Structure formats: C-alpha cells, structure tokens
Length: 376
Image 1: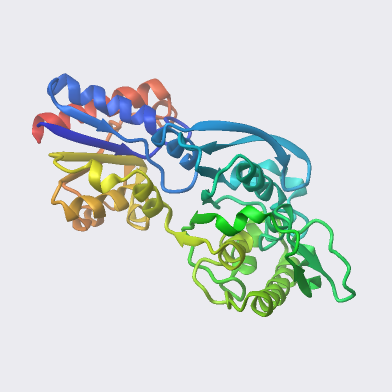
Image 2: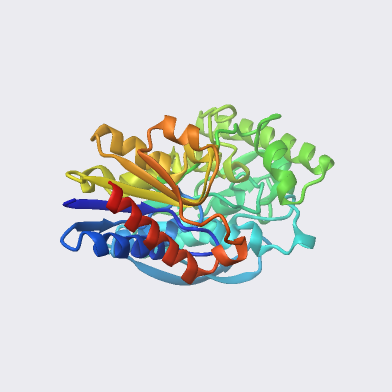
C-alpha cells in the first residue's frame, strides 16, 4: 500500500483520537514501512471537537475565566486558528451539565451566559468566524444568557430589563433591545455543530425531550415549554423569523434557535462540519485504504457518528474503509452500510476493565491494524 488515511474517533475514557491514530500508525509501519500515513484526529462535533479543531488548524488555546451555568466563575478555554480568524468553542466547556452538581441541576435557573462571554472574548481578539459545538448543555434558556453577554437586552411587559437569562424568565420576555449588541457580530459568521433535529418547543421540543435530563420535573418542563413558545413569538415579531418548527432549533435547550435567529448561524451535523473544516475529501485523494473507528460500533454508528461520515466521503472516491472498535454489535448492518471489514480490537477473554487501560488499548489497536495490513 502506498497511502493509508487514519481517522479514528476517541475511545471515550481510554484514548484520545490522536492517541488511537498513533497506535494504528505504528501497526501500519510495522508491515508497510514505506507507506504514506495520514493520521487525522477526528470527532463528531461532541466531546473532543475543540481539541481536534485546534490541532487541525495549528491553532492555540485561549485560557479564560467565565460564568458557569450557575453564574459562578469557572476557568475554561476555547481555540483560535493559526491565522487568528476563526474561534472554536464548545458550549459544554462553560455551560455544560457536568459543571453543575446533581443536586443543583435545575434548567429554570441555569444560564448560557458563559458561552456568550467566550464568543465576546473571541470577537475582541479579532475572530469573525465561529465554529461552535452545542452538545452537553445544562441549560434550557433558549440562549438568552448567551445573547445577554453579547449585548442583547430583554424587556418585560413594563419595559424593565430582565435579569440574567435562564429558563425562568422565558415567559416574561415581551420585547428585545438590540441597541447595545456587540457591533462586530454584524460581520461575523457562525457555524454550529448540531446533531439533534428537535424543534424549538412542543412535545418533541427542547423542554419535553431534554430538560428532564437537566433536572426538570414535569411542572418545570411544562413551564419551560410555555416559555419557549412565548420567546419564539417574540423572536418572530422582532426578526421576522419563525423558528418554532425549524429542525435543530431545540438543540442545547433552544440555543440552536437563538443562534439561527439572531446570529444567522448555519446548523450542521457535527461530523459534516468537522470533515469540511478538515478538508477531508481533498486529503484522502489517492488513498488505498481508510481506517476509522470508535469505542463501540453498532447501529448508532450509522446515525451521524464519525465512521459513517467518513464512509460517506470515502465511497464517493471508491476508497475502501475498515472499521475498528473496542466492541462490535450489529456487524451485519455495518457491512451492509459499506464497510469493507469490521474488527473488534479486543480478544473475547478480555475484561472491560482490562480493555479500558490505555496501554492495553494502544497495543490492541496496533495488533489489529497489523492483521488488517497483512490481509488487505
């Protein structure tokens, strides 16, 4: 083989995408020492997206303190590309559910304000392009907090400015004052990694589907959904945009809707956004083989995960794709989808605890790739 591309998602709780790729590359070199190996760290727009994008663009981390979902100061970071024009932000890094202790989880009270602070900081550093991952949020504030951090002001029926945006005040918003909005937003472009199709409100909307995972009881869910419906009407009267049934607007507690309505964001499936940013289709030209993978391969793999996105791009260039994983289920479905081969890296006798040890996983990936190369 002359050229092999490696694009393996992280094995969560075990190896990063880069570590898994390095182990696979060692396996290839042991069989084909002269082979050109292109190892691309990859993620599907969720956990790990930020680090992958920073690495792919020779970017840098920006350390910052911002407000977490409970409006407490929290140290976090985002990324800026090497040319200084594009910011990479993971909402979960500052507005994520793990930042709220289980006993304090309440989407009536949590806010996305910190995400807005990260965007504002990047604007002031000269960034005008933004790639934002919005998975894993602790909020159902429809992005009110984020927008407030960017200068939007929300008023109640008496014309009073409402306090920090959270789920509780959604029902109180009557009008929006945009006169203090950060001026650089007008020339900025936003692309959002969004892997859910849920509408803004309703039985399939943000509150009913996702708020219970964030600490809401049934009464809260109903109140949040009513607030989302009210805010959607205010958005329509303010911007002329009807986001109520638009696919993906219910993502991250309605953050998708506000990004679409106020920042003209494009909502894209995470893996599609990642592959476009990495210029994946051009980089794989001339490859004899692509090796992809993830911690567990099953039917979910075919629903927007890293391997399915890679398979789609590879088939257009007639490049065979081999899938490796810590565990494999529904192998027949994976073969029918078009993977040339599907391998579990773990021997049947190994325990999960053993398999999750990084040094064991690295060795098993390398050995599996050696087998692949010898049989290909």
